[in-house]
Amino acid sequence: MATLLYRASHLTVGVLAVVQRRSHLPLQYVGFAVALGVSVLVYGTALRRGWFDRRHIWADVIVTGCVLPLALCAWGGVREPATIGWAMLLGGSASAVAAIALERLQALTVVALLVVTHLIGYQAVDASPAVIVGHLNSLVSSAILTWAFRWYLRRQGHLLDEANARALAAEAHKARYAERLEHHRALHDTVLATLTTLAAGGIDANAPEVRKRCAREAAYLRRLIQQTADEVHHREIGTALEEAVGSVESLQLRVTAQYHDLPQVPPEVAAALGDAVREALNNVRRHAGTGHAYLTATGDPDGGGGAVVTVVDRGPGFDLERYEPGLGLSGSVHGRMAEVGGRAVVDTAPGEGVRVELRWPG
Image 1 (cartoon, rainbow, N blue to C red):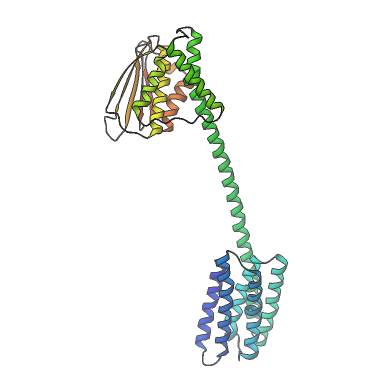
Image 2 (tube, rainbow, N blue to C red; image 1 turned 90 degrees about the vertical axis):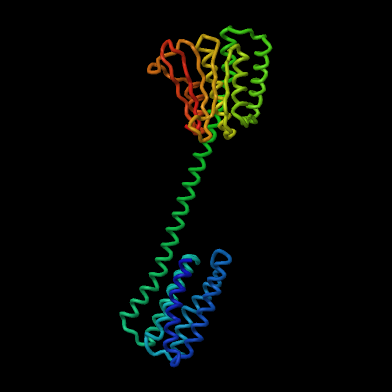
């Protein structure tokens, strides 16, 4: 496109030059028509194919860059530099295309051929040394600058490709890490919670509810090993919360739940709320020492389609300033809510129980 614009500027100069002298040098009309036809061939083919045809470039160099100026000098009645200047300009755009589309040795040959031809042409019309040197400098500079321009663009393209490759690799690594973290959270909230409770000896391992939970989590482990354990996204908040409540009730935690005006939220938000509630209830069962938790879920009182879910216990509570959050609270509760644009707030003090509020959007 850059060289096409360059050639278009030279052809514009040619049109103006020929029109101004139409009565004196009619052969220039033929020369301009030839230059225009060769230009259409070279650039029209390049636009269709995406790159230049080397045969067309050589035709452009020979016809437009070499034959045309000499023909105008020999048969066109050209006797002064001003009447041949437009034809000489076309050599600059011809050398520019050759510099980027031909091999290095061929490009150097083209530039040398154009320099010799144009030197002969300007000497034939008695051009001054300043005009000759200026034109030849423009001819060579066109080739050098175009080659440098293409080198720079290709270099930037390679750098961009490398940056994209690094970004894709980083994104893939991030995705693998996120998947691994999600598996860790799921195992912590389900299998590890069950095993910890059984190891503590606080429940009957042969109870039907416990055996059902163990069977469900064994199936999850099998899917995880087979790498087919896609997260099941619940369609509604109520369904996700009820599954979380049922999961901990099988480990003998009594939950009093109240739902009111639950909104419709994206499936991933419902799943995050359910998983976060499950872990909050697991913490009640492990640490509160009361065997009873209270769950409340409502629509956001401020409106806007949000949701507010709270888990409360009447246990001993703890000092937040001295508490180091573990994987359950930081990853399974705070982390899950943050990933879907929500937030989790823990409110507690020694002797006053614990209140976990989950709010979406945050």
